[in-house]
Amino acid sequence: MNITSTFKKISQFELHVITYVVAFNSLLMFLFNGNSILGYATTNFVELGVFRTLLDLVVDYLVIVSIFSTLLLIIYTFLGKYLLNLAIIVLTMLASTIAYYHYTLGVVMNANIVDGALNSPAALSWEIVPFDVIFLNVAIIILCCFLMTIITIKKLPLKNLLKSLIVYLILVSSIGSAIFFGYIETRGVGTTRNQRLPALFAANIPANLFFSYYKHDKQYKFLRSLDYDLKNFHKFSIAKINNDLKVIVVIGEAARADKFSLNGYQRNTNPKLSKIPNLHSFKNARSISTHTTSSMYGIMNNIPDGKKTLTLVVVLKSLGFDTSVYSLKPYRKIYESWQFDEIITKYDFLAKSNSYAMHDDILLQQLQTDYSQLDKSKPKLYVLHQMGSHAVYKDRYPKKFEKFTPICGKNKLNECDLKHLTNEYDNTILYTDHILAEIISLFKNDNAILFYISDHGESLGENGIFTHAMPNETAPKEQFEIPWIVWGSDKFVKNNVAAFKHIQQNINTHIKHRNFIHSVLHCSSISNKYYYIDVNSSICNVKLVNK
Image 1 (cartoon, one colour):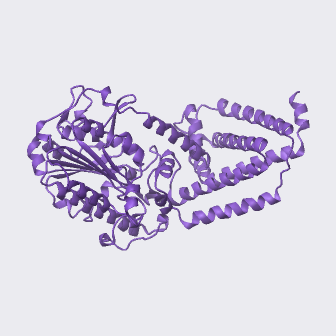
Image 2 (cartoon, helix red, strand yellow; image 1 turned 120 degrees about the horizontal axis):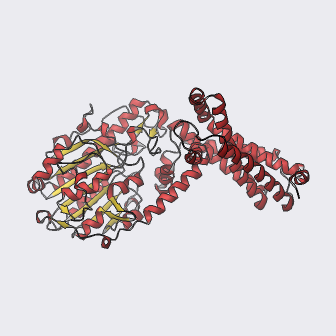
Image 3 (spheres, one colour; image 1 turned 90 degrees about the vertical axis):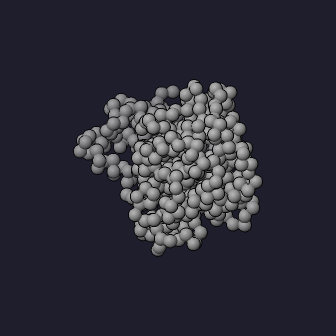
């Protein structure tokens, strides 16, 4: 049967179904991506010319619309009109929700956002879901149901539907492929042909949701496949003077280096830390990611050879350290993979608490309880993972730490006066100052070293962007610039004079998360003759290399 005769046998209703689905996807494309389409056009009309720019946009339209239309037609062909309509409602709700956060908070859908949504506690996620989003989705459901009562689709024989679907696929794939692969080498400035399809999916709503989930899943599977077995590596050793060492690692959340008065901020957000001796703050530290999970691996891991990887926990355990993690995060599986001896997460604290609104002092209380029973003659690693400065900021500190006023007090950050929002955020830093000072006070008479480092930074409305987790490639500097603080007890400084002197010399050097594990191990006088510890990346090395 030739194409012409097949065309003639497609009924009017079959064409109606295809038109219905294509029209829906076209509307979705232009309704939720109008701003980015206009932005691309205005940016490239001069650089590429009108014809080239319009051709790019036509190709984008054909690729996105044809892919989603084909998926919906397959649903209709095999599952019927009711599931087709349900898929349309769900797709519209997803698109509108993504668009809402994009145009109000400047959030760009990517793998970091997907990871945060899947791994954050439900209550934390709901904190940044305003009533507007709920109202918007209810309105969409009502509107879609109304339109679907007007636009009826009759059930047709599967044989006819398959014919129409095959013809549609042939048309779209032929025209789309010819234009997409044949007409031009690049799309825009600096984008190769191999980058075009990923860039297209990453830029368009709701295609970016599915593309982001794919990237998240790929990254998560890789991280879960890492081999932490110390048998893959040669033995480590520690200097005898540090056989009773206490290492305290505090992982901050969404803290910005430029909001610490230790780093020159005009407000006194560090009244306690600024008075503590043997404490140094690094002015030029950067995170490897704008999202917590990726940054955690960057802080605690070192990957010298493919999937064989070291974690700080595994190395210290091999040297006799007892290891504990107290966290207001839900990442038990990650902590278990790192082989902590003791794990207490947010859900464990919740089981003992009557309130979901817990502050970081609950970590401090747990630490104090454990410390009271601690064998001071043995080495110990404590990791405390804060809620820190995560939005919504007003919920991150007790009322008595509300020094900077007035505050915004809203969950919808884009509606805040930026000065009031900054006040609210600065109060979270003030509270972190208190938490760190209390921890230091607890260990001041021990042989102890404390490291405080944030997982990533935070946007506070600069250029209309709020919170964090933007794609690393396009995220602003505020989401990367983090505080990194090191403190040593008098006993530690006395035992490690040269190392602590080098810390002071390096405070203006540019460092990243990748320096962290090397710094903790090297500063603790831990060594390995096979160079798994890169001393040139250590803040305790006089020859710290800026990489």
